Picture 1 (tube, rainbow, N blue to C red):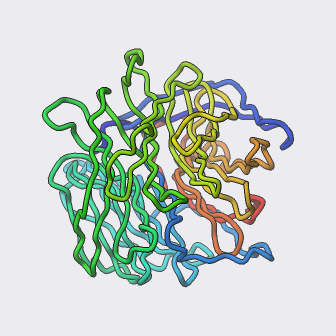
Picture 2 (cartoon, rainbow, N blue to C red; picture 1 turned 120 degrees about the horizontal axis):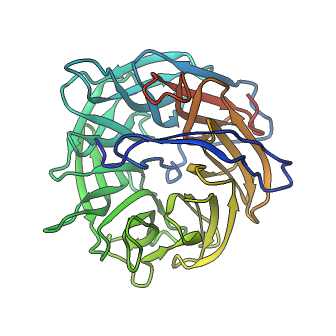
Length: 423
C-alpha cells in the first residue's frame, strides 16, 4: 500500500457562468482516511497509437458504474487501436483474511460494455496506477505490488505475457511510450532514498520485448528534502530529454508538513539538466503538481492544486514560473490535465465537492465550459481523463454509494462524453 491515503471530501458546489472562473461553495466536510494523499494519473502522448479526425462529434456517450469487484476504483484508462478501452485499477474484498488491495484490468467496448475482466487473487498488496497501449495493441501497466514498483504486459485478450517487480520498495505512477523507440517506455514514481530515511523521486526507461520487461536505465535525484513523489513524465518537444512533475515534502526552507510542487528535466541519458530542478511554493501553502503537458513552443503547462484551490500554470523551458491561473476553492483537487482536441486548449478533471468535474480551459486561463457528474447521495472522484478518437473524452474514477460514509462500498466509475463534456 502506498504511504499516502485517500482523501474523501464532502462539500456543496456551485458553478457560475463559463465566462467566469468557476467558484465552489464552502467545504462542509473533509474526512481524512488512510495512507496516500495522492497518486496517479498519466497522459499517453508519445506514440500516436490513436489518431483523431475531429470533424464530427461523437454520437456514443455513457455513464456507468461497475460492481464486478468489491471496493474497486479505476486509476487509469487508454483507448485501444480498435476503439475499445482498457481500464486498470484496484479492488479490496475487505473481508477477514483478505483486506489487501489487488490489481484488476478490464476491457470495455465503445458503449461501455465489459469485454473481459482480469484480476489478481494473490496474497500481496497490489495497485495498478497507469496503463498504456503498445504498438502491438497489447497493454503495459505499472503500479506497485508488495510495496515495490511493478510492471506487467498483457495481450489484447487479457493474458499475462510478462511481469517485473523492482528490487527496492516504491511505486510507479506513470508509464508512457518513448518517442521513436520501439519497446522503450518511460516511467516515473518514487522509491526510498539511498542510505537515508524518506523517499526519492524515481524516473526511468523500461525495455519491453515480448514478455520480457527490464529496467533499462533509471534516475534517482539526490535532493535535500525528505520525500519526493513524481506523477507524470513527458518527452520534451525538442526530443532532447524528459520533463517530470510531482511534489517534494519538506523541501528547502519549507515549513514542516508543506509540500512543494517539484519539476525537473533529464537529458536522453537520464542525467539531470542543470538549472531545471525547481520547487514552487504556490499560494504559500502545500502545492501538488499532478499533470504536465509539453507545448509546441518548448514551454510546459501544469495542472495541480494547493490547500486553497486548483490551478493551471505555464512554465518556461527550464521550469521557471511564467503565469498561474486559479480556480475553485479549498479541497478541490486536479488529478489529470490533457490537451484538448483543439489547439491551445486543455481539459482537466478531478474532485469538486462530492462530484467528479471536467473543465475545458484556454491557454490564457479562460474557462470555456465546466461539467460535474454524479448525484446525491453518491460521492464521485475523477482520476484520469483521456481524449477519444471520436472527438470526445473518457473519464475514470470511482463512485461511493454513501458520500458521507468513507466505509461505504465504492465502484469503478467510467464516463464517456462528447467534445463539450455532455453525456
